[in-house]
Amino acid sequence: MSQSEITLVQKPIIKHALIELGLSIKQRIDELDILSMEANEETIQTIKKLRANLNSEKKQVDENFKNALSPVTDIVSELKDIKRNNVDNVYSEADCVLKDKIGDFENTVKAEKKENIVRYFNELCTSSNIDFLKFDNAGLEINLSDSEKKFKEKCDQFVNRVSDDIILIGTMQYPAEMMAEYKKNGLNASSAIKVVTDRKEAEKLEADGDTFTVRFSWEDDRVSFGEVLEAMGHVPIPPYLGRNDEESDAIAYQTVYARVDGSVAAPTAGLHFTPYVLRALADKGIGMAEITLHVSAGTFRPVKSELIADHQMHTEHFFVTRDTLNALRGRNIIAVGTTTVRTLESLYWLGIRYAEGRWPEEGIPHIAQWEPYKNDSRITMESSLDHLAGMMEQKKTDVLEATTGLIIVPGYRFRVISGMVTNYHQPGSTLLLLVSAFTGDVWKDLYSHALSEGYRLLSYGDSMLLMP
Image 1 (cartoon, rainbow, N blue to C red):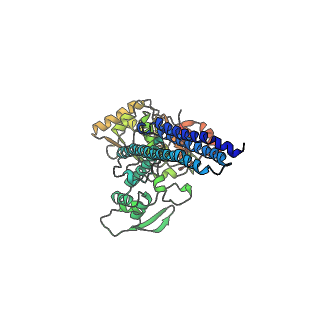
Image 2 (image 1 turned 30 degrees about the horizontal axis):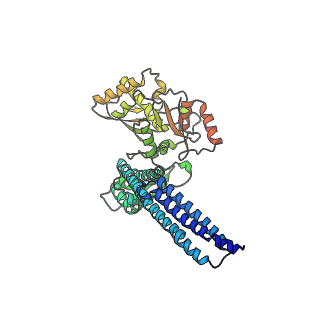
Image 3 (image 1 turned 90 degrees about the horizontal axis):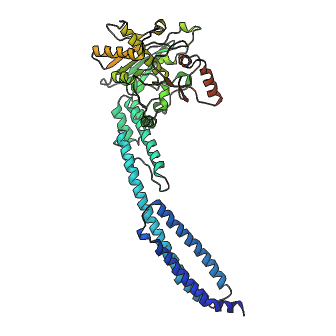
C-alpha cells in the first residue's frame, strides 16, 4: 500500500481529530470563564499565558498537518477546508476574544492605577502646599509595567523638585513675579529667576584690597536698594571652588528650610536634607527645631596667623524662638553644620551672661571670641536655658536675638550639642578646628578614610555624622 493510500485511509481519523481539537479549544476558553474574571494584573498574566499556549499549539498543528498532507494532492483542498472551518477559524476567534479581553482588562487596571496615582499625587501636592500643580500638567506618564511603588517614587521626586524651586523663589526678591514666570515657563526656576534679575544693572568702580566700590543704578524709585542687590547679586559660593557661580547653584547652594534673607553663605551640611529626607526623619520620630542664623562671609576666612590666639573670629547674627529653646530641653541635640554648633553653644553662654547679671541694658548681647575659655561655669544646660526663658518672659518677647564671635578649638567643653552633621572642611580653617575640638585626634582618621575612599570634600561634598 502506497503512502497516499495510507493517508486516504487515515482521512476519517484526521478529520475526526481536527474536529475534536477545535471543540477542545472552545472548551478550554469556556472553562476559563473570562466574563466573570476580575480585572487585575494576575488575571492579565493568566490570559496572556493561555493565549501564548494556544498560539504555540497552533504552530505545532500546522506543522503536523503539513506533514500529513505532503504525500497527497487530491484530498488537500477538502482537508484544508475542514481545518480552516474547525481549527483555524476557532483559533482566530479565540485569539480575538483573548486579545480584546486583555485590552479591556489592561485599560481597567491602568485606569485604576492612574486613579490611585493621581489621588496620591494630589494629596502629595496638598501636603507640600503646591495646590496649583495638577497631575495632567506634570508630564508624568503612567506605564502598566511600572509598579505603583515605583511611580509614587517618581511623584515624590517630581514634587520634591518643585518644592525646592518654590522655596528658592520664596527666598528671592520679587517672589510673586518670579513665581508667575515659573508657572509660565514650564516650572523652570533658573529661567524664571534670570528673566526677572536680568532687568538690573551694576558697575564696579574701584578696589581696595579685597573690597570693592560698586555703583547700582535702576529706574524704578519704588524698588529699594535691598531689592536691587538681591536681583543683581550672584550666589556666594565659596571662593575655594575656583569658579563663578552657575545657574544650578541658585538651587543647589540653598537649603530647603531657608526662610529669612541675611546669610552670605549656605550652611552646607544642610544641603543634604531634602523634603523627602525631612519627612523620613519625622516618620521615625526624629524632631527638628529651627533657628535663624545669618552666616557671614568670615566663615570662608582661613586661619593665616601662626597662633590661633591671633586669629580674629567672624561674628554671626542669630535669632532663636521660645519654642526652639523649649525643644532643646532633655534631648540629644544633633546640630546640622558647624555654624549651627557655634550658635547652639552660644545659647549656653548667653544664659550664663544673664545669670551673672552681664546682660546689656540696650542693644543685643554678644558672645566674645574667647569668653567661654575664661569662665569654667558648672551650671547645667537646662539651667542656662531656664535663665534665657526667664529673660524672655521678663522682656515679653518670644524671640531671642544675639550675635556670637565664639571660636571653638581643641580644649573647648561642649555644653549643648550631642553630635553634629558636617561636611569635610578645608585645611587651615576654623571649621576644621571645631571638628577636632569635638572628636579629638580621631578627625585625622576620618579625613584619611575620606581621602582613601574618594569622598567628595568641601561645600558640595559628602557629609558625616559625628557622635561622641
